[in-house]
Length: 227
Image (cartoon, rainbow, N blue to C red):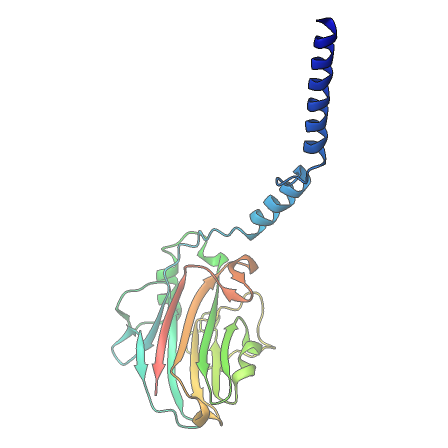
């Protein structure tokens, strides 16, 4: 009987040991701790939460008021202006035709820390041979499509009342520049533009508001311009 129990015990020990070795040497389907930490770190880096509260709109000025524009149709004729648009932090359909700086301040004052945000643009259109999807944060960003569409940026805010001023150049551009309006003019290759043009204005805080050079926040407004 003792011999039998000894044999049984030995067999059980061998089974347990063999099972342990198989489990120990089997590739784990669960990543180790260091791998987990790396994955979590990358996921945290890619997480993005937009707490920008600013509502933004693009407005066209006329003799009596400024109108929120969603679509606009105009002839595309070389060297002729297509449209001028102004940015305000609102989506009201019609706003006053008063001093631009004062009006901008009026709507900007509705948001805390709004001075921490800058204004950028995005333009998208197709030609007979290529497609443009360009983020515009400073004047140099408009050069890539200049032969088709000339886009001029203006800092209307940092100007004295009644002072004449031209569009903002790359040499003029600083960290304090506020691109409050744009003008779109037909370029020398305007006849090759083969689609409608979409222009978006947005407010951003820093590089975290972009992914692959594309704005990913909520503070954005888009206008479609048709021939």
